[in-house]
Length: 367
Image 1 (tube, one colour):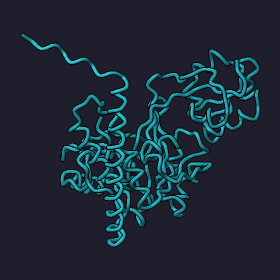
Image 2: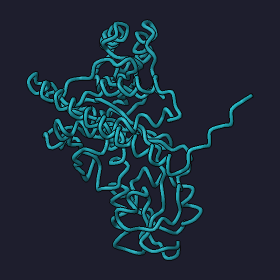
Image 3: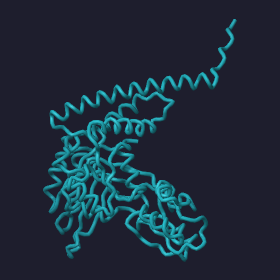
Image 4: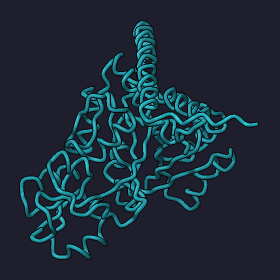
């Protein structure tokens, strides 16, 4: 004879259990924070840096592997980034430069990578982001490098050629563009302000719904939102966060032409102030090269990769502006130079190139 089922706990009882767990979690987090402070003291004595992207990537990857649910695996990373961000800020403030003002996708990418416990350094241009990171006004710079709809951000690629900064990490952001305005309704919109990439990514929607409106490129989407906040005849294309920042109505959500519109951002640091990340097991090596203008030169450049089994995940070309129809090639490889096969492939590749520069080797998120 089976016993009667125990009655389900009521809502009040469940809330009490959750409150008790929250207090327990807070206590555990404070214990973690105390350990982080002790680690910080050791790092100061050793002269080590506070932020190690490969270490944080390994922590998150390990937690994803042991997660048994019902918490979803893709929820683990943002939760622990915030925990590590809060603990890191106890050791030393992290200053991050990005294309501003507040409310840009670059700011959102910065918060997604470092967590919200950072000091934000908003810059007017990509050049200023690099300058702030070079000068020490910021510890890190975050810049977009490519969009799944419109391709590479050419100004950033050109800046990579001459800057001593190197890539220590990357993050990808699902970009949803929204039409924002100070007043409701589409009537009377004379201009739409946004970054040139955003205007291009919303071309079809703008052509159909606002064919007569001027498309006015500005330095950032958040700058477009700021302009829309002071002129009711101006609309902006920007994030919901930018709309909230400047008190704008969302006239139309998600107006980008491609539903799965993503932008990839790189995180930059100065080699004199931050060491290159060690291999994490899931890494990308980025480089820029050029080859002599002769038959078969590009083929010869790729042979070492095939010989040593190194996969190429990105291959972009940019004119060298020499007037000789020469090009720079931006290449992403799977793996890290600490791995013998990658190291050997790079050594042989360098011999075939007229110009060779490793932009960085860094951990990537394996979905």
